[in-house]
Image (cartoon, rainbow, N blue to C red; front, side, top):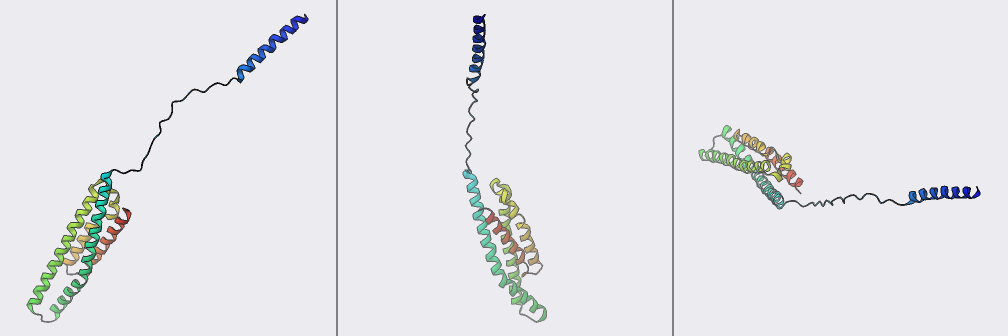
Length: 179
């Protein structure tokens, strides 16, 4: 009996140790396939860069054109309006009146020329994909130039420069946004 007891203790302890040893063995986890590395770059296509640069250059040109025109308009508008006042109150030589009418037509034509350049620029910002994000800043410059022409055609030459000042502001804001 004693031997039987020892043998049963031995079998039980061997069984316990066998299960304990099995529990301590390390199981390797199932291998996952490696996740592909995503490489992101902040490169912009060359066409986008070229369109943006071209748009900025055209903005700069229009800012210069409108600014120079506003500067010249100040003196010309005053002269036209002063001569109109004199023509209503005093006798003036017909040649001066004719010259004044020619000056009025030339100013209105110059505003139309500015309008054409501004309309072309606004259309370019509406149609070229890289420039569309700046449309919010530039939108409305054609309408402002139309207002300027309307004021000039109604004989309010000094006031016709005010909408053009707003055009310069919009163009400048757009240029800053494009940096």
